[in-house]
Image 1 (cartoon, rainbow, N blue to C red):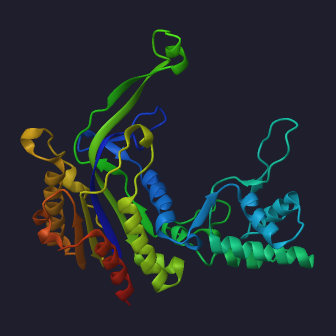
Image 2 (image 1 turned 60 degrees about the vertical axis):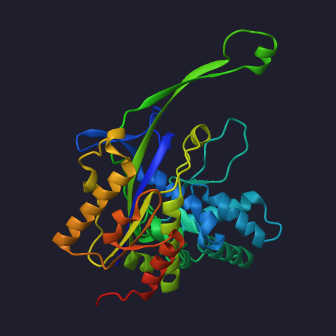
Image 3 (image 1 turned 90 degrees about the vertical axis):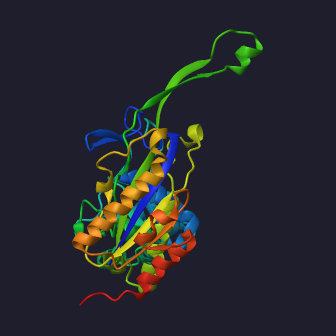
Length: 376
């Protein structure tokens, strides 16, 4: 079972995902330059929104500061344990994980500055439940004066995944046995039309200088931006998600949480400058039993811009529907489809599924996962 999420969303002048030069990211598709928002950027925004939609116990931590994170939890369990000892104990826990352990290194500090807790060489994704179990194990070993049970450490790493770890996966470069395969794939969002980058020339006034009647600006500069209607796509592998979570009810809750958070999230780049808060014009859900299918081919020929062509979201919706119908005719229809629309005529989508308000759409995803019977 695959839940395909297709989104059309207009974004006003903005720079929500920029490259190393500060320019909005772009891509060439269909022979023209498009606005682009990386999958990493929107996955990060989705994970941040989980803080509003999920209980903290269901959310993980993605960090290099493992010793500090775990060490503080160990100190909560062992009275009088000094921070340095707790951090060292935490570091030993991670070094004991798996066959080779997670490599921990001392971060660089200025000369004569106090040492900092060890850090991992890369970001590691752990669930709140895993951190709790590791802290309990470390505290017990410390009180008993015993060696940490390496087998138990590995068992903890491979059980009790949080929803975000189960969705986005975990890669441990030092030991593949500790990896978690992602059950969600997210495409780079691209504009359905060609874009031209623009520059905002700005000045900033020095208030103190103005008070003393000094001429000129205190600062000048430029910010690059673009506006676009984006096609966004993601897919959830329900079998993989259930394998990672080990529970059907948790799987249904995770799938619904992802759909809700992915649709309503927004990357935060330059948001204070542009206040580019929008919600999608279209959210179309296709539940498939064969394989995920992106509808990005609907926009290989860029949507024409200009007043004489009408609104871009409506024309993009018509192309999205046409592409979905063509694929259904050639390869077979999805098992179920439903959509939410705002700002485009719902009759454009009427042939592609049931018209639902967004909260009902999210609930329908949860219900479909709960009722799913895997093929044998």
